[in-house]
Image (tube, rainbow, N blue to C red; front, side, top):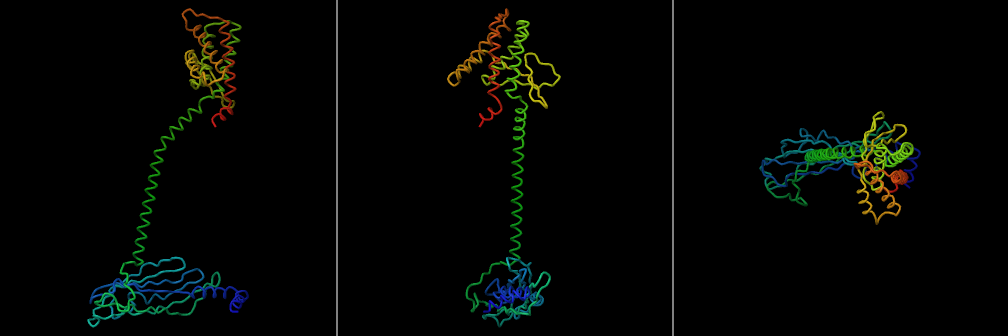
Length: 386
């Protein structure tokens, strides 16, 4: 029945009653709780010791418990028959829905009549109010309430007070100590992050030269013309040489051009690297090299050449005899024979030029260059690298 009435009041009365109900629910448990902590359970006459008062109060957005701390300071608190030597008030600490505040007192007793007795640190009456938020900019202030702090017994010249249920922890665990430990923790975290950043910087500095070398090597690879472009232009060079020989016959210049082109085809056939030198658009063709171009919008030109000989082709053919097809073997045998014939026609003291044999060498080299260019299309090369 009470729940139904409260629900009807919340629905019809509105936010003020809802805030009051929320404040009542939150403060019903423990709006404020305080406890003593002493540095020792027994003292001698005139021996300084410390007593710490710690309180935890509710501190949330809808509900705030506001205690009267004006009577808890060192200058206003009354702890007779003990004398106050000094004290401290560390900064407040917020954890969850609670605010913790603490007062530290340094005390002593010089009353001779207290020897052998339990002397109480007087209890405290802590006044507080409960503030409840009603609306966006309005709050409801409750009436004055009192929290009674029980007295703290201290044994004079005794190990523990007679009323103590257990031995007190005399460790220094005040809020000030916790704050200093938190500061040291933050300092060590900053130091660890700084060392980690320094380590990362050293790793980056170590990887930069490697990345530059890799980038330089990649740039060198990207500047090379693709094999299909080289083979395509070499096949065109062989066709042009054949046309000029058919018109003018075999001359020294035609034979040298044919030998250079066949060497490039043979190098690709046995997977040997071909020398490529970038060439400007208006630069003349170096002797012993063939000019190759690639690209339409920004064509790149290079002078290519190869030192492959007939013996190199023969050794490669012997090594690959069991792993290549009959067609590839036929190609290698024809290139070997053609290189031998062209080399004899160029470099012998008395050149022996058999026109029929040399024509067959050019025809075979041009056919092999065309087939290799078709095999090394970009999509076939990409598929073979998968």
